[in-house]
Image: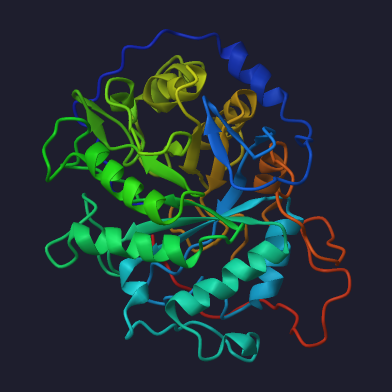
Length: 420
């Protein structure tokens, strides 16, 4: 996620919706979605839905666990927790997917992890880069969790408007993706590649400019990945501005109506939008007298139309905020989740981590306690675990019923980082 947002010149031609329609959707968030608990084989995009090889619908309902993209070069929180306990808690909370941000710098030999307490995580000692990522992926697979890999930024210190820099050209970006695609080919836990996080600023869509056209770059990278690993979903985020209309970084998919992403293999494109509340930036639609009834029109215009028209599935790769209450941010979060549930849209919530500066996380600052207000809302729309979890009873939002004596119990405190 990138926090500085620009909304100057934003114009929305929206129809006013009845406020009761949003209220009704929010009221419907009273129970957890039920479905079969196993996805067979690679996932595919069929019109506006994700399906497994048996043709059964699958929805990804997960969280972002960040850190690999930062200077720690490891998922955050391992200074306070055992990594297996962290994954146990994610699965116990009912999520089925982890979006795992990383930077290209992670794969450089000099990028050594920090912020890991090896007394709590002795089996991570000596691991770095891809080997450390492998350990997290393996643990996710053992718990029935799927993984989306998110190329979040080129380096731990660099966030950019475009998918490349002078120091990290497009060729390196694509070669890192094809390396990962080959490495995880046949691994049923890793289901897709989120090619680049939040293109914005000078990023364009469909104009043919080789330096800025994100849609064309996504096709180049996506086809390169599919040549190596034809099982992956190719996740393509939006941009910030299209035809004079500005939206969230990575959130504007209006251009895909006229210029859809076309890959060499059908059934692999998943569009992804990021959507945030006034705690990140106080957009004009939050100030409208029609709020929150106007939200559905805003979402339909920028990304939801793709699923509604059966063009392709949509993943809300990031959304989040501190409040789930009756204020503007809380109302927005609850309305969005109701909308996603009603439309069958996949999501990965930002974030599992508590150290996201303007959104907080599902976890409280002690890195152990679930935020009950957030979980009460999120648990109303969760799809079951997609893999084959191994034995072990997990309490609601908690720990294994009988923790392994070899794995230290979590405790509060420890170093805190803020990457947002």
